[in-house]
Amino acid sequence: MVLKSFVEVHPDSHFPIQNLPYGVFKPEPDSEPRPGVAIGDYVLDLSQIASAGLFDGPFLNSSDCFNQANLNKFVGLGRTAWKEARTTLQKLLSAEEPTLRDNASLRQKALVPMDKVQMLLPVAIGDYTDFFASKHHAKNCGLMFRGPENAINPNWFHIPIAYHGRASSIVISGTDIIRPRGQGHPAGNSQPYFGPSRKLDFELEMAAVVGPGNELGKPVDVNEAADHIFGLVLMNDWSARDIQAWEYVPLGPFLGKSFGTTVSPWIVTLDALEPFASDAPEQNPPPLPYLAEKESKNYDISLQVSIIPTGQEDASIVTKSNFKNLYWTITQQLAHHTINGCNLRPGDLLGTGTISGPEPESYGCLLELTWNGKNPLPLGSSTTRTFLEDGDEVIFTGSCKGDGYNVGFGKCTGKIVPSRP
Picture 1 (cartoon, rainbow, N blue to C red):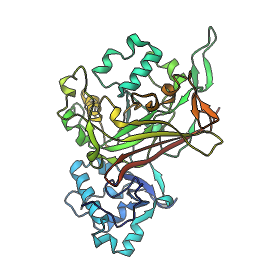
Picture 2 (picture 1 turned 60 degrees about the vertical axis):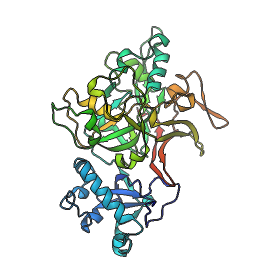
Picture 3 (picture 1 turned 45 degrees about the vertical axis):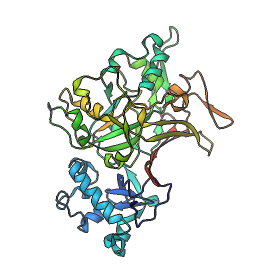
Picture 4 (picture 1 turned 60 degrees about the horizontal axis):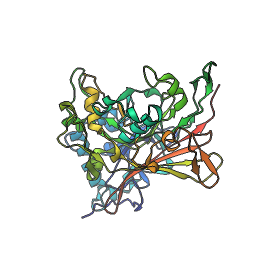
């Protein structure tokens, strides 16, 4: 029997009762932030559900986790509490359950039209790490900058490569991105270029939201790592390619990455994604024992990037990829992150790195799509791009196709605005 909600959900919606992703919102501009879940075109206010005493299970009945300004306390409770919340919410929203369906007063307070709310960052992000987990992306970058002899460095096949990112500049979808200023490679014997980035790019990524953390000095077993991941969001890890190319030797990304990272507002839980689990690619050579999973899986999440060029109204699809294209799984990423004893905390964000597929139309950034600017990318019938121009808007979407329903992430959008002196 197909689970159905009493809330009307369009067949194309990303937010049926099978999904119920979590976010944080304000119903009015002067309201306090509060947690919610998406259902159709509505947000279910979890503070109202909690105040009505409807979270009556053993893990949530005395918790104030849904009366917080972010989801950190809830995600820190762990998988048993997450499952209890999901079971409760699916029952309350089901077409056969009268508790909320037939309570007009509570329904009016708890179900808020999505187009009326302001979405906020769902968690307070203490730390942010960005991985480099797509083999196709790693190979393409290596071909461009090192040539075919050493396209992928040998260590890449043994460890999930990553760097520590900047949590303070992570912003919610819909926030404008100011073109960064910085240094670029000098031309000939001149001084390095300084000014607005000339090679501003998007990066098609997703990110895992950490649930319960781990104690300092106590690594997480790779086969238990899924219990430390609450869910996934879409992420655009904007890149200033020219700034990064000049600065990254010897310590890696810095100003070319830390000016802005955009995430989608809804966290889709691993429980909602479980029906779309798929085998991860075979890893050769086999990973070291601490990264060897009993069950190594990705998720079949179709990803798409569109660009609305400045001054235009129509969007052009520029790439279609899939989360399945990751070589290193999110559980391997988390386990590797902690193997030295590093302690993760609830709300930390682990970016996947650019998710590129094997075909040119599945490459996950303009660096690859234009081969570092050599092959301009058509946008519609009369516009091309090598890199992003001021006024361009970039739109990410992601969804899984179920039997008569979708489990999706909504949109992750950002518009480039001119550099500030």
